[in-house]
Image 1 (tube, rainbow, N blue to C red):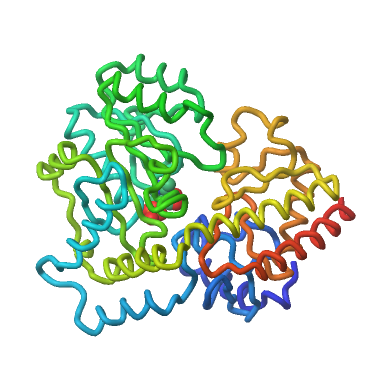
Image 2 (image 1 turned 90 degrees about the horizontal axis):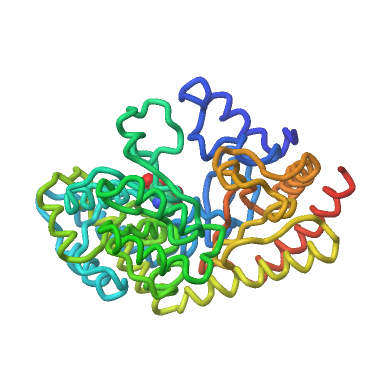
Length: 421
Ligand SMILES: Cc1ncc(COP(=O)(O)O)c(C=O)c1O
């Protein structure tokens, strides 16, 4: 391990382990990355972040997605400061909620009514609750990551068996597997909640088929667009693919990092939220509302979404050329706005390769894994922050220069990694 470069990070990690279980949150542990990654970050500006030892990185993870404009984006931070100076959490409702609700209704195809919460898990859990009330059924069919609450948690420890029994899943791009689940549990399924896509793109007809199956079985279709909105388009993946779900959850990217999330959906379904208690102390905070309104305005004014696609395409195309030129066994998957680099060939992976990545493993051969670890050891040392086991993100602050530097580092890192194995 390169201890000089990361001295403070490692010192703090030792302290952290004495204070908190595991030291730092699971998704942010060194075991998720590679040997030379820092553990503690200090600041960020635009598309660049700085660790506690003062090392600078081009950030392609963007805090797992919320930073859509760039870190420390002045217009958004200014809007938040205005709210701080007025007081931002009151006994009653701030009118800013109405402005943001109307904006989301204008932008998102399925949005007729809106509920605001604080986190992605809060939004997906609220959507599931609403679907259960609306249908009078309890089972949930899900695909993708939806957060840490009981019904959606990827690990089973501490989750009641009855909850686990009520949650089923299916294989992406496999309509038969979805139909089988619905058929076997006829009349008991409240909703299908799914990310419209992650690193596999939907095959032609897949999302249409999901919509048809939801209709046929009387099941509420929820698109979890916590990651895809607004990056794909200001109307989300549902606008991009032309498939309208019944409800949608939003969070990352809505407010450039300030905590806020939302459930949007058809009026008739959303109306039953009244029968439940979906309420928390911090839901009415104006910090996230002001940040969201400013972020969305900035996305519109700067045509940021086009920029996100352009940066992702330049990065992905450049990486593909380098990989091919060096005859490395690796592939770029996913959409340019959320590219994912795998080592090895997807065609050679087993059926559960996706799950393997989710559990922190790697699907390739031993040699693929060694190449991968070496590659990420070298890219991070040279100031490029990629995630080895998660797709990456682009933001408005990424520049062509960032892409150029990233590609140059990639080339150097691949050369070293290839020599090493
Ligand atoms: C698609 C999706 N849904 C829900 C969540 C949960 O959001 P949060 O971590 O804010 O609870 C995430 C977080 O990564 C996500 O990617």
